[in-house]
Length: 195
Image (cartoon, rainbow, N blue to C red; front, side, top):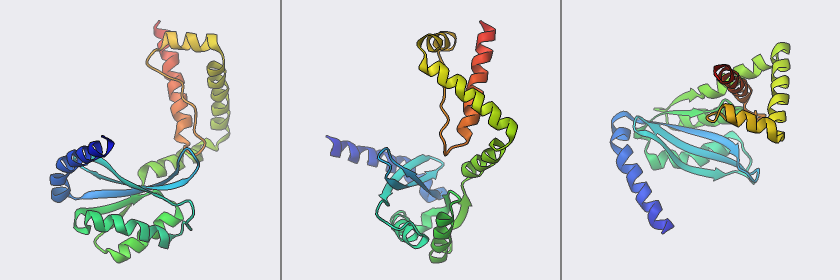
């Protein structure tokens, strides 16, 4: 059943995106991350006006994650999709990814490189988070969130006042999560005032 479901979903994705891909082209983007077992992976996705599609993932656990390896691994995906269908490549701003992208553009001159705006924005927030006042606020809010999550009564009160909002924990490598956590507590504060 799983094999047939995969075939059906692949067919639906192809039908939905094929016209858009040929008419407008796509952006192919690569993103490195670790899975739950802390194994490094390289995800390959494409985006077009019809939507985003996960193409595949490369396990790079036992590999040297240098520009040449990444370039060779990603070239196969580019050739499978078809160079004529790809407008640009988008990656994070890690040195190995930028170098791999330069190699890809050397091999496929029609490609254009676009750095990841989210990654740039996250780096900006990281710089803001280094200021003394931001560190103090984030530290205090972490204490509040941890307290609420670790104690039954405060968590129950929180859930009674705002059923649509969940407390967010910051993720160490995504600095934007500190600001999202602050925003969530601010929304909760407004919700309490309305009651």
